[in-house]
Length: 158
View 1 (cartoon, rainbow, N blue to C red):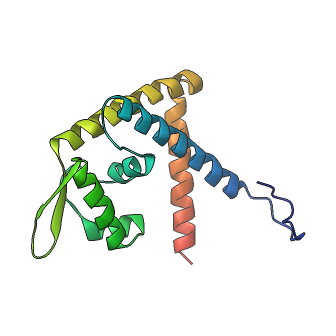
View 2 (spheres, one colour):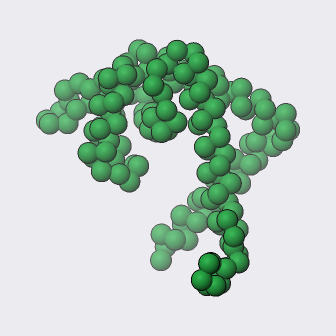
View 3 (cartoon, rainbow, N blue to C red):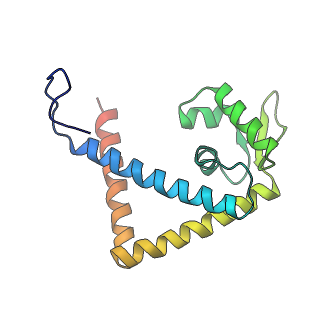
């Protein structure tokens, strides 16, 4: 993406933040695509990168649609649609909860899916450690976390 001018000649400011967003997004996309592809090869059906991303934000215990929607910044309807799809695939199930709220939990198959995803992530950890050294990945994570915390603190202080 050009950072100098738009088609109409509007000047654009150079931005390291934009480069950071694009790079971290690309890493996320590459890893998610790799893991979903490998999981499908292992027999987990209809698992797209977006469904895997959705599953990855869930707690291992009980989840609630409203809470998931708040955390993702999406509508409850979008969460309900995705949960329904994942229930059909037998990765999640809904149970009666307190009041009108439904509890959303992993099925046994869903738990195996997430365990297998973690194993694949550990394979990626090995690749990172080979490239960055044993402590390189930890330092990278610490720096990205510090950047995230700093930006969050500064932007929310205004």
